[in-house]
Length: 283
Image 1 (cartoon, rainbow, N blue to C red):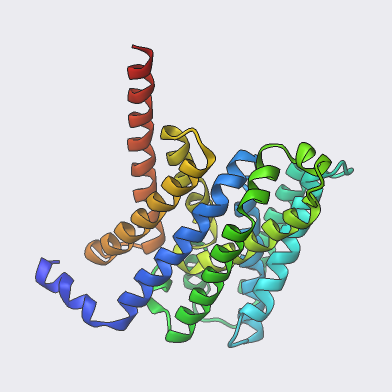
Image 2 (image 1 turned 90 degrees about the horizontal axis):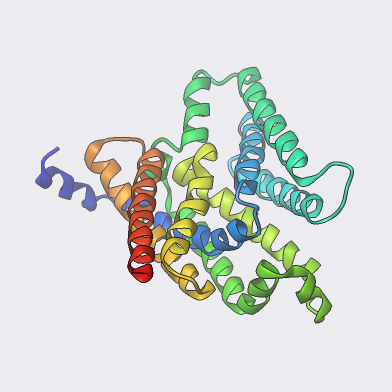
């Protein structure tokens, strides 16, 4: 594709919708990503994305025009369940719960899709799992839903930043000082679920963890303060999302996979820069 042909795409509203939605989702994912990585909950995004896939399959077979009615409540319930089993001593520990829920939801979702009357089951599944070009098919309604939810997530994070910081590094101490850790863990669970549901249109169910993990690891490779890591993570995530969407349009490649590839490149660059900085300090 020539550069002039590439520029013509910006005459279409769906491209601007994709850029706005991609930027907002990347920002929200990076904010909670640092907390999840530090609390060793990195793969909770994977498990919840599979739950969302199963819920989406049910909504699709039911023929619902607004699939959020099923997907969002189910994903929030799963997030609360996973965080509860991860933070308490139960017969079924967090890792086992995550594996069980993740695999079961993925299998049931695929089974439901195959039992449906859809003429293109493989296409539906591929789009849901890997994002495909669904980000480029957003409507104005999808755009406003994403804007409202993203603003809500960002505002909640800013308002409760200090509490999130406290339970991220030492939840036991925070609880001893009077912080209601259960409420804030519940808040984190709900916010994570919202981010997962929003991100499904961007990178698909199987690739959501990349939006959560890679930017956080990039920030941790160079910065030592929590605030520095969060800010750098947000900048990297937004930049990678924009580059990934534009590159996918230019190269005609799947949007989700392209964004993850850009995130991987950023991680390698930051890792190399962090290694060089550590060597320079020792010298």
